[in-house]
Length: 181
Image (cartoon, rainbow, N blue to C red; front, top):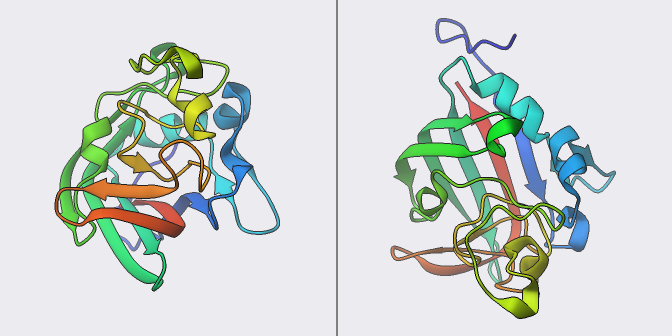
């Protein structure tokens, strides 16, 4: 069992890194469940591990986002982040935004995880089989297909980006997600 240690120092845990918006995150439900990575730095911890870690302890979530073309870094932190079990399709709950990137991820609060082979988003567009993961080329907790697109292929669907009313559209070079105590 994983526990967050508030009394002692706790190192952030990398749960996602998309180094360049390639099609690396165009993966199946089983792959997102187990996790995957490559030697270039692309990484997904795994939905089952996210569930196991967050189910009984309080964790924060941080996004580090490098925007193109000037490679400026932005961040978004959320004071609470929980991933439910596979029986709930790894539904995600998030709250408590702070940062300078604008709040794109709260839009996805309460959504179930979607991959190209397991559609759990409410999107309706028949050319793309009504599936944001098919449209964008990567699995995620989709509500609409174009707000927080950190697992999306650059140049496909809505693109590899982060959108908020505070910052507008940040087209990304790199994205990272961190679990923090």
